[in-house]
Amino acid sequence: GGTIRVTGNSSFDYDGTAQYNGGTIIVNGQQVASIPNQMMGGGRGGWGGFMNGNGRRGGW
Image (cartoon, rainbow, N blue to C red; front, side, top):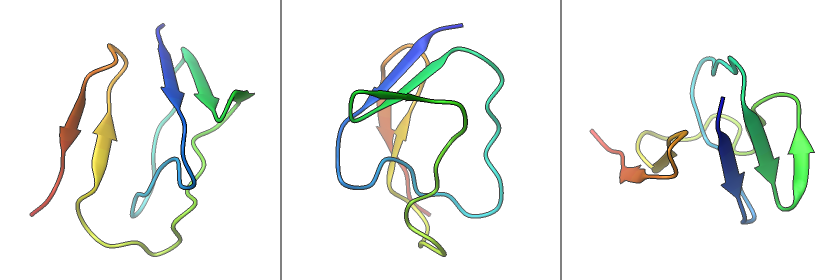
């Protein structure tokens, strides 16, 4: 379990697939049932979110 709360114009950016294995995802105040990919065909890197609320800077 756990909760991820994301506020912003673009919630997630990933290439390929993302897995949602439980817990709660809240995007801009609305609970969602899947991980939305709002930056279609985005590049590498970006901000990552983790179930414990910590983030990290991505990149290659």
